[in-house]
Length: 240
Ligand SMILES: [Zn+2]
Image (cartoon, rainbow, N blue to C red; front, side):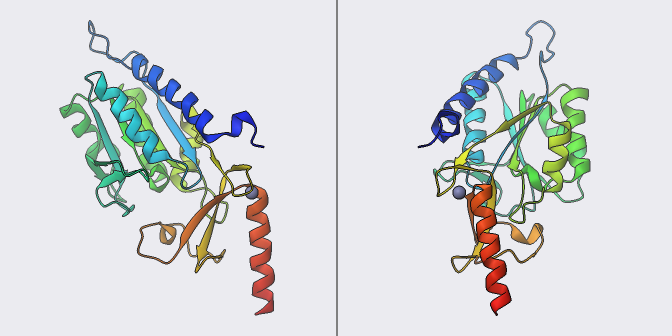
């Protein structure tokens, strides 16, 4: 039996409700042209928790009201090329690819200003550097454009990505997108699998990108199942 608050559909409904009102609250003031509420948001979860679908839904919410959004993502994420793709099959081209050494104020802000954008949406934000997150923070609070980031909190070793760690430190609004473990509990962690077997060998976060070209697949699990899989992997390793 899944507790009500852990049901992904209930969470999604609540989240979309928040997004809807967020969309309204970020309407630009017709008199002053200034944004009434501009913040840095971070929506995080385990892998396969529907972050890209949530991002695309928010983009749609804005555009239904005649507002413009731009979508950015780190160039290091090769999944989907230069598009944001959800597992439900919906896809949308990316307006700005952020290179590893890029200043986000140099590459994102000019596009946002040129398009008079109401909101900047950033997918796969875990791959941003600390400095790039600080740049987004400055855009939200210095330039007055809301920035909504979406990303994975931790990698398969259970440690945070640099971009996610910084976002957890400085984002004004944090939201967790929930998904369910195979045991029915809330999944907050990820297992990396090679040939269907959990593999906890440290290959580095950057190599652990799910780009569809490696043999690794990822399963989002609860902490209990994560530790169980890790202990089994360690036992197996000792035997060999
Ligand atoms: Zn579990």
